[in-house]
Length: 318
Image 1 (cartoon, rainbow, N blue to C red):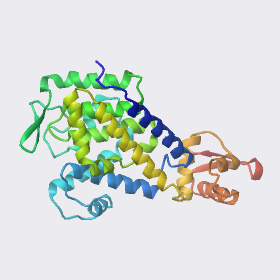
Image 2 (tube, helix red, strand yellow; image 1 turned 90 degrees about the horizontal axis):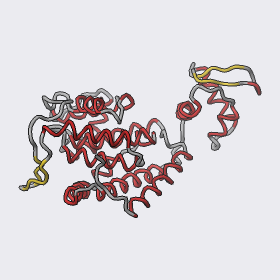
Image 3 (spheres, rainbow, N blue to C red; image 1 turned 30 degrees about the vertical axis):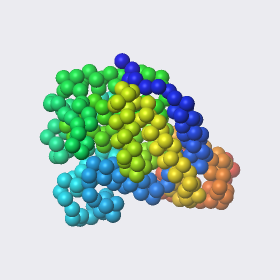
Image 4 (cartoon, rainbow, N blue to C red; image 1 turned 180 degrees about the horizontal axis):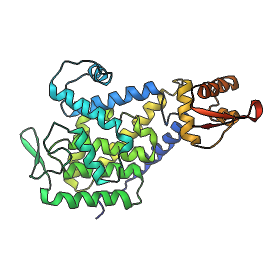
């Protein structure tokens, strides 16, 4: 059964603006941002997603853990960060449309934090906000069929990935399939669905903006619960997605290194032969001399092979 939601004028406007921004991101070569920016954004993502769940470690401490330095802090908080680093490093191997992959990700994310990591809960849960029960999740007997329905929707519905990712995030939070870790799984899986359609989302710290608007995040989940459809939550998340793309575009004058250009061009050209002229056409901001230096560096480093010489030279990634 298809999850319930309405396509409002606001949703249509947001989708149009996001699509426009994705075009600008691709034109500015930011669909795979420079290495340093990717690392920074990954740290911000981990920090924000865990901070929402009460983790106390700072960005500096998370950076230190990534660099294998010793960090002093609550054991549980350090383990949460190590697990989050592991699951984000594993992102490319996860299939956004596979329920088994989803459980595998939860197993990595919650390893040694809950006994049932990677397995659906076998008891009933309620979500308490303050002194009130904000949400009673469906019974454990219903979980398998509800999650199967949700993954069927992901795989077969022709809605845009932008909308499906928001619907999945909301519905998964509503179903609450695990004893713990549902919030971070909802945010992680939305990123994975978006990344599958638009690679730039693998590097955008959407969680940072959610953390900044944490009250609105929970209110939009609550309003969607009350109306029985995810419309309000879709509008909220599309707003966040648009803002994250605008932030990325605001730093587009960040300069790419030769390695950034070489890696980026590989994702464009794949295994095909190409010339220096074709390489240059993709990076209009550099001179032909810089293009020649890039290609010489890549050949000398064993990253690409060169066939022919001077004007007849052709290249291919190894």
